[in-house]
Length: 340
Image (cartoon, rainbow, N blue to C red; front, side):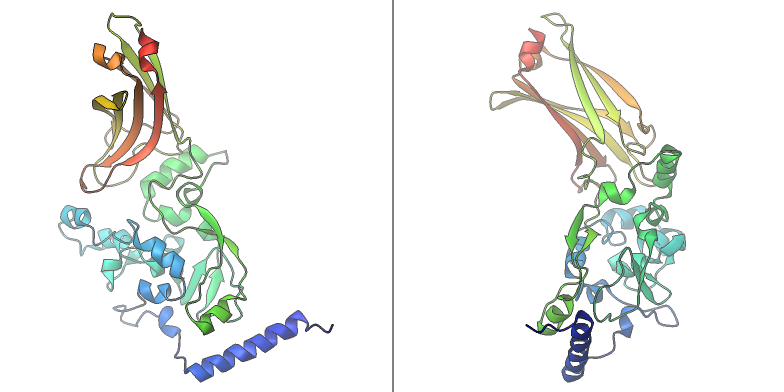
């Protein structure tokens, strides 16, 4: 059976695609990478989302997308027009650490062009395998390094850099972005589906970048507990919390943050009591590699509980509407047996 050489097949496909463009009356894609000369207009995230559907949907639910519009930022900033704030909360671009404020579509916060657009090209960790690229693309290893995040997260980056000196440790992306096999673009109609069908799948980072995306670092914070003073006299629980993360706990340049330990005592299906203890905050953080021991005296009723759930939670106290992020949890079964 006669088979068409791969190179010839690609040529034929390219000709067909060009014909489809012509028949569809396609307009120019230059708007995807063009900032107006006065710097007052440029691409919106939804323009990128027309082809990068998965990435756009993932981004929409992140704090990056709400970096400018969030209630906490608006209330905390007296003069949000200042470049010092907007360079990170609504940046035009952060490529190679050259961040500056954006004057258009600020409500999109840290959007697609903030991270990927530089000098008229879209930059990323992968080269294009498509037969046709609607805009210039440049592969750049910068996107696989912590330097990408360092532009705005300077304090955390300096902590990471100190810990990583002389040793190989996880990068920001490896801890906070799950990876997956996928095509960089996704089709929505006959033409785009044909175009995407020629792309190769790559190991890409999920754009759901949130503080609780710790799939690749499940033991970032360890909790151990030991029963002291067994018997009826002053039962006490010794709890040790160890920070295995390559940065402080909590970390971050601005805002009030607390790490709290939640203790939930259960007797069968009934809750005996729940208590919360402050572990650290932005004024006195638990540094990388540091441990903290908490001696917690129990009431007789608590010591007779069946189970105890220990949960380490991060609170953003200047954003009370934001739910706490669970960093680590541990269940101690038959706690009454440990004390009696």
